[in-house]
Image 1 (tube, helix red, strand yellow):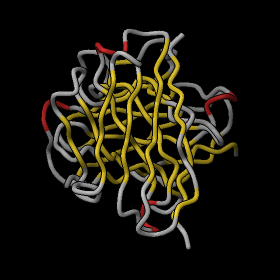
Image 2 (cartoon, chains in turn purple, red):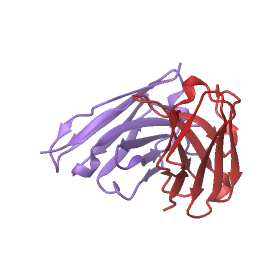
Image 3 (cartoon, one colour):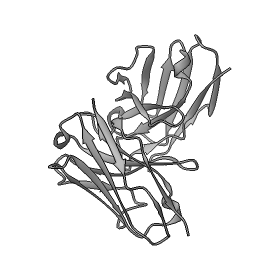
Image 4 (cartoon, chains in turn brown, yellow):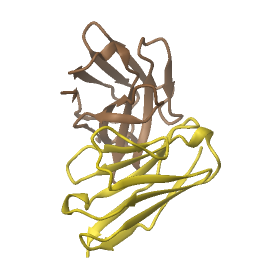
Length: 120
Length: 108
């Protein structure tokens, strides 16, 4: 059974940093591109960042480019999102999601989500 | 950035009825790279359809997707009680990948 388990969400002050993790199991993690998608009641679902299966290519939404860094450790089956210079606009539930094999960046499995709250 | 507009915002139907959800893009994107997701309260999104009309693994055949260019449709042929949820479309033909704002299918 494919599982994605996020962790690392927390309450952080504006300007602070946070690192999210997502551990995959039940599939060959190194074979799949992965993404982070966030969700807020006001803005809905927003794609944040993607990384190729090897980690050699990364992609970012304009809203996070230069502040967030996506990475992966295939030896640990783990995806990361380093988030710096956080603002209240970054408050959201963050999901990690697996790309559907051979079908581009749509997402066939999602984690349960981890809540990031940016507030003073 | 491609904006996806879903309509209606809310669809009130009874079990057994047919649901037709629309997703319109602000411009054409590549190769009908459009997906549909279902999300229930407190749950993560679930992939239903990719490449506009391909059902994801394990998705019942009462769900079907159609369309091309800028106009896409998700049809649920006969609503089951478990189908009442929010549905989102997503385009992945042009970066940044974007989602629609969702259509809520509620019990009438």
